Image 1 (spheres, one colour):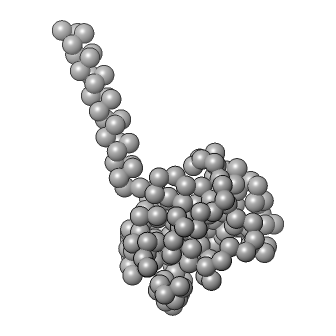
Image 2 (tube, rainbow, N blue to C red):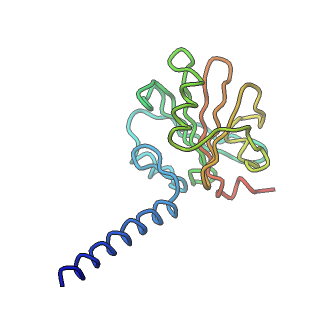
Image 3 (cartoon, rainbow, N blue to C red):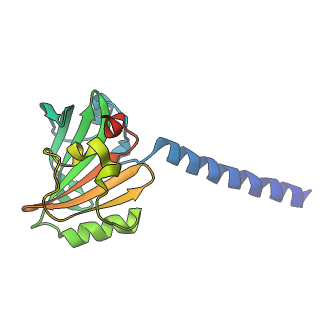
Amino acid sequence: MKKLLAALMALMMVFAVAATAFAEEENGFTFRNGVRFQMNMDQVMEAETGRYEIEEEHDRGGIGFWELEYEDTTENDVRADLKYLFVGNELVAIRVNYETRDISYEQVKADLTAKFGEAAAVDTALLGKGIYAVDDDGRLEKKAEAIVNGSLMIVIELDEDDIDVTFVDLNAAYVTAD
């Protein structure tokens, strides 16, 4: 009886771990404070702390974006500005902007690859219209690399005197829009 009970307990633990992994994959990437893609602006404002600004709608490549910006926050123990990008009222991308005086491109890349996988050249075909979430004019002009992890693409770009890290939801409808 004890062996049967132990076997059932072990089986239940395996199912619990599998269910948790499935739920994490189904829900996708979770950023700080529980922020996830597809949340609306009110949900992000409830989860995030600090002063914010909502910028007017920007038309980038035929797509209207709203930006919810938190300046002078801390991300990974480094001062950063955060921008949550919405198409309609759905979170589709998150940009973290670091100053090069605070952290190096190589350190940002090392931190992200340790957590999400290896970086490679940016596959703009995979990114689709999501390039406008990464860069206002749809061009990556300086050093840029990307990590693809499931439906998440992380673009790391050295741009003048800052490092932009953009987390893009590859499942978002705006990415594949014509």
